[in-house]
Amino acid sequence: MKAEEQNLHQSIASIMNELKGVGKNSTNEEENYKYRSIDDVMGALKPLLTKYRVICSVEVLDVQREERQAATGGTLIWSLVKVKYTLRKDNNDTLECVMFGEGMDGGDKSLNKALTSAYKYFLTEVFCIATDDAMMDSEAYSPKVDAPAKPKTPGDTPSLRPQQAASKIANFAADQTAEPEDKTVPISQEEMDALVKKLNYMNVSNATIVKEYGLKSLRDMTKEQYEKVMARLSGKTA
Image 1: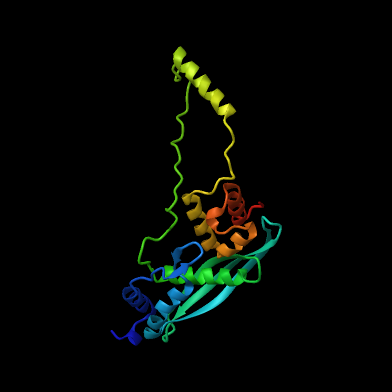
Image 2: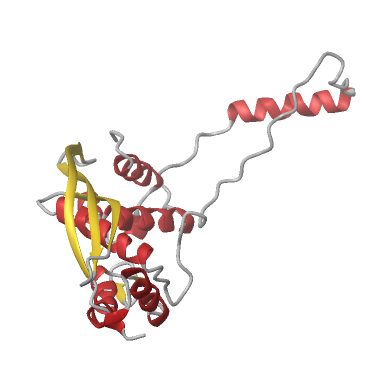
C-alpha cells in the first residue's frame, strides 16, 4: 500500500518499522557522556513524517511556574507544562496525546526546556524510538528494601546466651559512639549518575550547577552539595 493511501495508524506503524532507533549522538563535553537531543529525534523523524504525510499540531493546555531558591541564594524558575499533541493525515484521521514536561533555569529558558522535554518524550513514546545502546530508565537504580518483619508474639523471641547478649550490647554501644558521615568527601559514581539523570530530566545544564558551587566539574561535588542540589531539584528548600 502506498504511503498516501494508508490511514494514520498504518502510517505510524510504517514509521516505527522504518525508524530502527536514534542513537545518543550528542555529547556533553564537560562531563563526558552521550545523550539523545531533541534535534536527533526530530532529524530522524522528519523525512518519515513527510513521506507518510503525517503532521503534528500543538496545544498547550496548562502552564505552572514558580520561583525556587538556589543554594547560593539566587533564584531558579521552575516550569511544568501540560501539552496536547495531535497527529493528523490528509484524510482527517487524528490521534491525540497529552504529555507533561518540566524545566528549570536561572534565566528565561525554563519554559522552553519544559516544552522541549514534553515534545521529545511524546515523539519517543508514540513512535517507540529506541536508542542504539543501553538506555537509563526507571529501573536503573532500584533501592533494596528488606522484607517486612514478621509480627512477633510473646514467646517468639528466643532467649540470648550470655555471649550473644554481651556482643549485642557492645555493638549497640559502638553504634552510639560512631562518628557521623563525612559529607565533605566527593560523591560516588552512583550518586554522580543519579545527579546527571535528574539534571537531564529537569533540563538543567551541568554548567549552571558547576558555576553555582564554584566547581571545576560535577565530579568535584561533595555529598553535602549533592544532597542540597537533589533536594532543590525535587522541589524542596535546600
